[in-house]
Image (cartoon, rainbow, N blue to C red):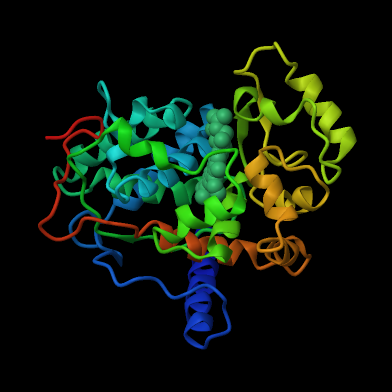
Length: 324
Ligand code: HEM
């Protein structure tokens, strides 16, 4: 069964690549980079299994680590590339920056690393563990997997100040476009990747400012009332609300359907529907014939290649929370 699923995924991934070669897909082909599928095939053949088992164990004890790890990978890649810098702990590291305070799942990555160091010391980077784990969380939430090119090396710099430019919950489409295009991701990839909000939650604190005195008629009024009840004006800002109402545990395209009904939770989600630059993309992704899953896989491969360190650059950390 596992083999059949892997095979299907590989076929889908290949057909995805082939369709992009034939110009049928809208996303651009991935950038040239030093990562490749199966990088550890001879140096650590059990690497991907070890990561998958660690993520599965973490997920079984707390399913909320799935969205946590997916978001962590995004935050790693958007701050000086996918180099595992988000994993480093200590004062003034990226982990201490406001957008990263609610990241979860660090212990799962650390657990995978401990097992990998026992099996193949000094071989598998933390940046790759995070990229593989992000894919595994999508599979565990019943999304489509993909082959993750590996061979990233770990960075040695992690500064909170570098994390300030991450996309924020109040960002307009123009600002989101600017932040994604600065890293080589186009508008379609932006919308597809925002579809990561098909799983997980947000704290009231990050979107409560849009709940009261909101005169925007494109917001579903019943939904607004529901959010106001969940996140009262002077209530606990750490209370968490599903980003994809009705389907927050399953990786599917219902997030886009919610956007079209005025049920986006973050302002940055809602504007993907109201802005003419992104609305047609949401319309395509929400349809019953949606290609969201395959497009998400391909966009993740592209995002996971941002600014990677390969070859002799960077290092292979001994533990993910500290440089060597
Ligand atoms: C497009 C710009 C984006 C903005 C402005 C944004 C913003 C946010 C915010 C504010 C939260 C809530 C954080 C909290 O309260 O703890 C969140 C959660 C989340 N984001 Fe994004 N995000 C964006 C793109 C992405 C992308 C590209 C991915 C992954 C591919 C992603 C995955 C997630 C996930 C899975 C969660 C839920 C986390 C959890 O439940 O712990 N986001 N995002």
